[in-house]
Image (cartoon, rainbow, N blue to C red; front, side, top):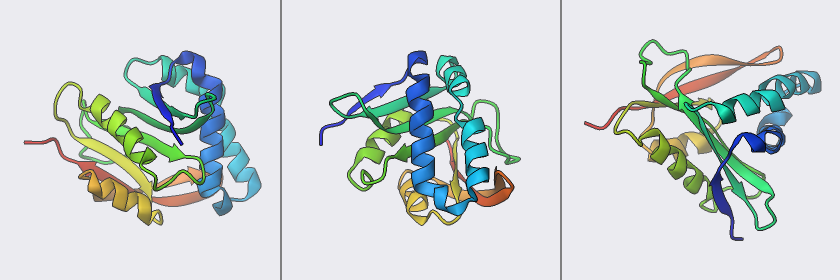
Length: 174
């Protein structure tokens, strides 16, 4: 299947909101009580919130679309907001990278990751960060191939539940 990768803009807020909710639910929805999942999705992926991110010059989002324009994956990047004492001004973060169920392990995640990495490093080397669920071993291996290593952890709230997240860092190239 030929998929097109493009940078999302403010007009994509509703599409991004829907895709974020779908991919998060497909990936992690089984972990949460329905009311916790619904509250998290409504807050984290609200259309208005996606519109703000898409309009902000310090953030970038890419959509992976099929020939009919259906969004099937996304990646988001911006300034690092992870709770780690070594995060410094100017550090970047891969905020999200998700594909709809069934598209994993076909190279699409690599395309999204490459777009995000190119954007994050557009002004030269800098330290990059990503947070990943402690039980998502596939994602941890994927990020390790990009030079990320575990340097910390924190609790990620989804409703009343708190998930253990690992903080991964890729140092700036010498």
